[in-house]
Image (cartoon, rainbow, N blue to C red):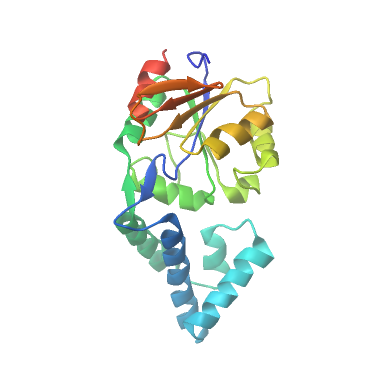
Length: 231
């Protein structure tokens, strides 16, 4: 697979740029975020935290489906300043940053590559995670041209139609696009079915620095991307 002349790059976040840390899991992280919101809803509406969690889940999963955190703030009339402050504390305490990913993104940006985020997080969730990595803040990012969060794509990375919508946003299937992520299914197989033919998958547990299998390049560190993608 020749990735040297590719200009459009879709980068994953979870387990690629940031990851759960300190013994936490991604499920622990989502639970902690929803628990924080439920606590604020409980105080605001003078109901139990259990009742608040039911109301929150019903709003998120049944009424909106493709939500973002500002939807919670405005619907339940919560204090935005308090929410974002606590969200940042959660992100800093429960996430770790992969330095090889940060270095790779800065390198690709220096080559004037068109970088985009593609994630199973909503947009502000993406920005908060990128903020921990020093690549964004809540108002946006200078490293990525657009953040394709779930509330924008109205889908998950495990769904071919979601990738097709993103491809359409980028100009169509004739564009040379590369995905970079950690999940073989979601960052290679599914986008490949949608028409994206180039992928780099990072497996930091692999003993082999670089391997190529069925059109997918696998690396054990994103530092290897510097050698794969040239000006």
